[in-house]
Length: 487
Image (cartoon, rainbow, N blue to C red; front, side, top):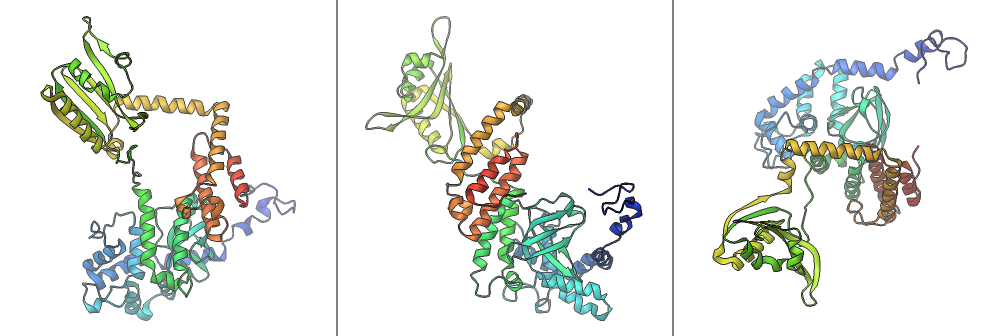
């Protein structure tokens, strides 16, 4: 911690800090002076370069660049300044993009040069030499993926280029305040006059768990006989942008994994409703759907009126696992509920809904009339606003979870369950590791780096979960995999 003005100076002189090293410690560093000079010199530069881009390419050219940046996605035909990717796109448009003579609709005079190169040419000797050096450095710097390895909040951080393998200290006042070690940035690192700054940095900070995919891209680029150089990154910049958009897109608009039922059909909840003439007749026609259940077992939770007539009953729809040996499957395919004048059935796929409707109509014949079928996807269930009752129930559940999380016995039991899970995890095939197990992956440098990233993600998520993940679980994982313990 920084000593107070009236504290003894840490140097051991016996003087108060304000009379000893305070002035020296607060003196601006040479790189800070350079950074401030650069900030003043480049004020308004982005706007000037964008005007140069419009003058050279027109708005049609900006839209053409936007389409290329988005890999010709038909939903991205016009530049959207409110897009979360605009902060990456604009520097790419200004410094990197040159219309492709083979595909561009722009006139020949607008091709062959980037907006920044055109700006330098037009400005000539009038341009501030520092600004010229900065623009030239931005043109030369490739986009890449950078890992946060050290941070000094309020000042900057050290970044490791995951593709090139180099490290550099970057001055970044605001972005360093909330930086996390292991986080990944897609950006240009621009070096000028002995300092390095970020340009074209994504506002979407990528978590450590994204690193295995970047390592895979690095492996593909390394197959080039030239190795991985800044020129190679420039050449394959659209491949880098494609990966960035995929990784950032998963964070900005996460998609649900494909959810299937036990038959492998896509999960989609269906509610079938029928009008019926007789509750008892419907029960007698459909009761054998509950394979293995007797009438008495089905009636155990049924309702009857005072006269002993059936007024409500549920029939679980089961199937045989092995028809030849009459082996019952524990899976329930759906549930049929019968009440006076109404029959409803709930299933979780299109195929089951079609099959069950055919069964019901075939068995009840003229005694049943289909009224409606309602389908609900998992996505729509998540998007639906909860009712006040559901909100209240959720609060009660969260409060109960929080209460349980404070109990030492519960924490200990959860920790042991997670410890057992991760002991098995190191020998499970992980898609992010190329379907290798973590134990197998750590045997080569790239795999080891990917496993390290996954464990860093585990640590990061573990701090946020409730109760927090026991740090000894991660230490044990590292020891079992031969990874260095983190301070």
